[in-house]
Length: 143
Image: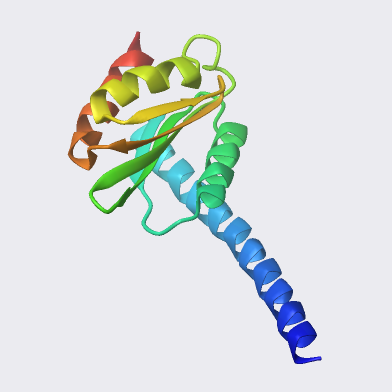
């Protein structure tokens, strides 16, 4: 009985955690959208500390849904390495597919990566190069 109660409680906590991750993703996406509108800028990059990849993907999905001309680099530093997620809104995905851009981003940041035209992931690179990666994305979007 104790094992079953423990298992049920664990499932409940996992469900609550998932719900909170979704709420957090919505809050973060709204914050990013506000920053984009304030700067009248379509390229966004932001560091997220201790966020699960699923939450970063949810933020990227919400951004692509709400800001069709957006391009973003979401990243986190872990033990001196960087993990990053690159998203491209639907209006830019044909011209600037994420799976192609990630190749250039990994050359700048280091590490490796891959993905799809709307979303790509990479990791293992140098966190000190994030400003260079953002400058590259800024340049690309102006072309």
